[in-house]
Image (tube, rainbow, N blue to C red; front, side, top):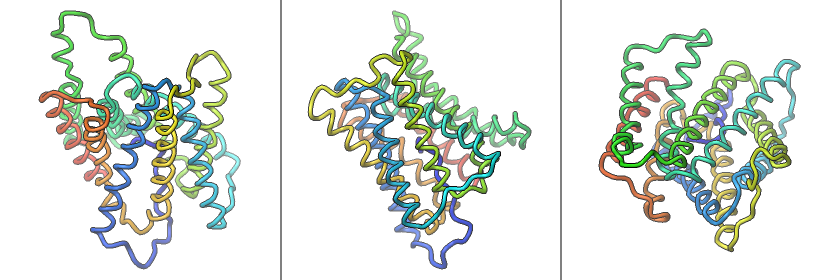
Length: 313
């Protein structure tokens, strides 16, 4: 799931878990909701909406919902002196990931952007190793190579290289932005797991959303991303922005409320439905299609990520 890191389950698990069939159905629904968020973003971008506008609307709406949940639960926002710096870094990583991923979605087919961004498990394993963590096992290394081979097929690199003309700069920029988003998301997960793991998940994510909103607002006041605050030109563009905020905010909030009862160590790999749902929705709604080689590569990527997820958990 290419979105802010999901909070861990609370230390005290409830006595009863949701039956597995219902838990899997709920996670599948949430994965489709997050996929719909990206489809709605592409519709808004095609209608002239700026990337920063979408990030502001999404992060602002999600922060309001998270704040309401924290208030309802009666939790306070307290951080240790040394935690504030790491929390700021976490929020900046999520802000960068959001901007990069939406910028990629605006340039290349949504399914491809999600496939590239889903390389974050590989990058997280390598980052953890580089920062003194355990070295990836031989099995993990082979799965990483398999995923990269599948990604080459999914991006149709052979077809791009065999083309008569140069590779489109839009295509290259979109792929690089999605890859940058994956790296930033992996960095955010590392900070969350190694430096802020004792913080309540809802508080950590609320503060992250506040940093994302503030960062996007700050960037919009500069000339770093001209036209990034452009408004949609038609009603369907505005509706797409509303759907974007609704799907993401609702999905994220439901995940918060139900996560302690979802048996996430067992059921979390179900969330890998998001790229598949994105591919289906991109075809049905946007008319974006992939050739046979790209479909095969996408299947290899998703299978490898699924195996890595099961191994990790």
